[in-house]
Length: 148
Image 1 (tube, rainbow, N blue to C red):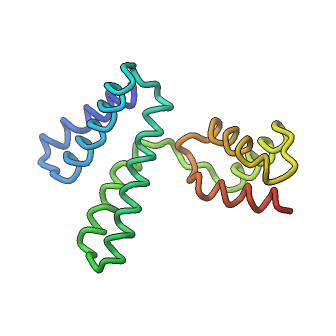
Image 2: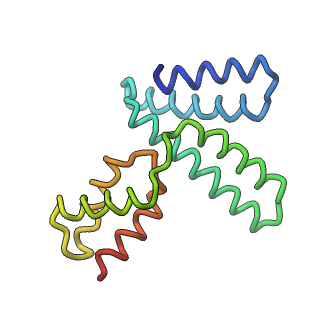
């Protein structure tokens, strides 16, 4: 079953179960997917769909941080709950040990020698780990590795 089909099915299931937060979250995700399809006039691949889910999760977490800074704990909790709902549509997270191996392989494959090559390394890692790692964490690990 494709990711988009699974999201639609889960939306219908949540609607029947009366899970308002889940329904609204999944509808927002479907709207983002549909908007991207309309803008690009294309059917989206699974990788692009994963990217959209990642972007939605990132937006929710950033909004939660802003709400916490603004002393709006109830809204921050809602945003984090939405991010948690969306998290189930991403593949299993990559363990740290596997991530280190992947970064080393990417550095070797693009012959990275300095910080100038960070973009190439990040692109190589992103292709291999789409949806399985936090790219901010990867960025920091690559910086640490290339700066040595």
